[in-house]
Structures are given as C-alpha cells and as structure tokens.
Length: 78
Image 1: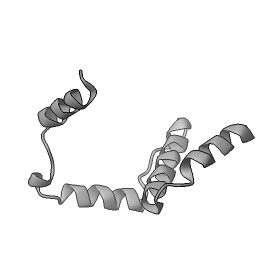
Image 2: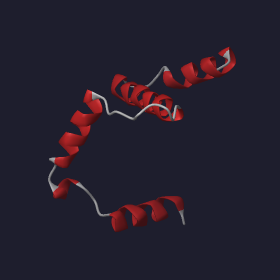
Image 3: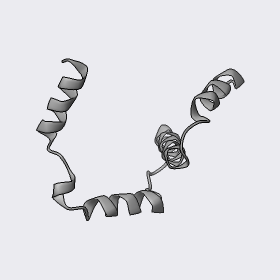
Image 4: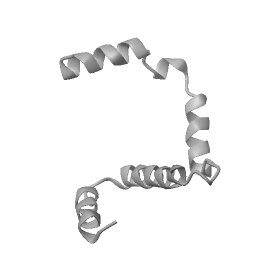
C-alpha cells in the first residue's frame, strides 16, 4: 500500500474510540487472513469470546430481521 493511502486511512481512524479501533484492527486481520486462500481461517480467542457471548444473549436483546429491514427502508427511503 502506498504512503498516501496509509496517511488517508490514518487520518480517518485517528479520532476513533479505542474499542472501535480494536474492531477495525480485527476486521483488517480478517481481510488479511481471507485474502490468502492457502491459509485455513481460524478465529482468534477474542472472536470466539465475542461469538460465545452473543450466543448466550437472551433473544429479547435482538430485533427480528423483518424489523431491521423495515427500519433500514425508513432510514434510507427505500
């Protein structure tokens, strides 16, 4: 990646909260891992923890897909 692109990315990311920045780093790790098809994809310990915590959440904490789609259609005027 060229220095100009790296500077642009850095400028956009420097004001993020630490938690969100960590999510971005994990996403970049995912992209890096999946871009090399010779590697087997393996979840990190943090990703496993996140999925485990989500699977233990009560169903009441989630919204239905229909409601999510309806909310998005209202938000974006579709």
